[in-house]
Image (cartoon, rainbow, N blue to C red; front, side, top):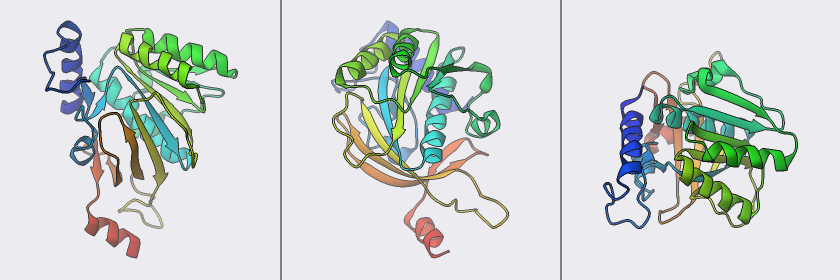
Amino acid sequence: MDRAALIAGLRARIARFDPGLFDSGLSDARAALPLSPEIDAHLPWNGLPLAGLHEVLAAEPGAGMGFSALLLARAQAALPGRSVLWIAGEPDAYPPGLAQLGLSAAGLVLVRAPRPADALWAAEEGLRCPAIAAVLLVNATPDLTAARRLQLAAETGGGIGLLLRDDDANPGPTAALTRWRLSARAATDASPHHLGEPAWDISLLRARGGRPGAWAGEWDAMRGELRVLGPAETTKRQRA
C-alpha cells in the first residue's frame, strides 16, 4: 500500500471520531487523498477530499477512465477492506489495465444500470454505505438536486463519488467539490514499439475554496505515483 494513501486513510478514520482534530482554520476540513504536491497545493484539503463528490470531464474516453481509475485506486488504498462500485449502462473494465494504475479487481463491483434512474439510485446507496470506498458513475448527468443527494450520501459513508462524463464546452453548474477536465497526451517514454505509461493533460476547472490549475501529468507505475512534468520535460516531448 502506498504510504501517503495509508496516512490519508488513518486520518479519515480518526476524523470520524473527532471531526475537529485536523481542522486548520478551513471551514471545510476533510481527510484527503494525495494526488501530487503540485496539484495538492491548489486544493484547500491538500489533496482530493474523501466524503465528497467529484466530477471528471473526459475529452477522450480513455483519458477520463484512466484518471478515474487512479482516483479509485487511491480511495481503495486509503480505505482498506472497502469495495469500489463501477456503475454504467454497460460497465467496461479491463482488470490488467486497472491493476497498472493500482486498482485491485478483487474489491471491484461492476453494476450494470441501463436506466439513468437506476444508476443514480445505485450510486447514492453505494456512497451512503460505509463498506464502499468509492463509487464511479459513468456517463450520468444528474441535476443539481440529485448531485446534492450524492454529495450528502458521500458525507454519510465517508468514501468518494466520481461522476465521469464526456467533456462539454459549457458543463453548467455543479454540486461537486471539484471539477476536472482530462485529455490524453503522449508519454515521455513513448516509442514506435511502446506506448509508455498513461499520461494526461489535467485541468482543475473548479475546487470549492481552491484555485484552478493545469498540469501535464504522467503515471509512474514503478513508484505508484502521479508525476507532474516540468516545463523542460513538456517542451522536450512537444519537440519530439
